[in-house]
Length: 75
Image 1 (cartoon, rainbow, N blue to C red):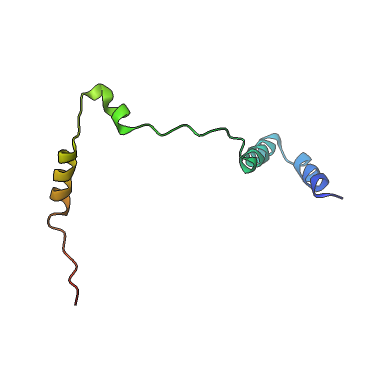
Image 2: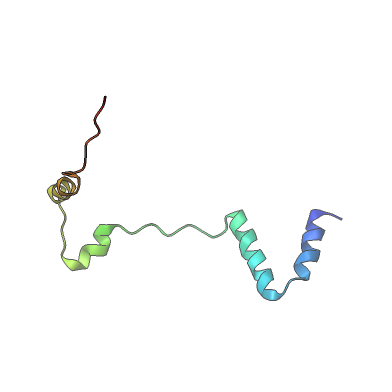
């Protein structure tokens, strides 16, 4: 008996919902899920909020967050 026949025999014994799980698994193994949706840019998410972040805003936030962070002392 081939592997394919063994799989089919086992598959036939499963209830329909478990058969669907097997199908989903096989599809994921083959990579047939299709192309993944591209990630949305934060600029796109904020576009309707009239919210603008500059490089200086980011630099200031970093200074505030890391300003009091203890420095590593090399011995």
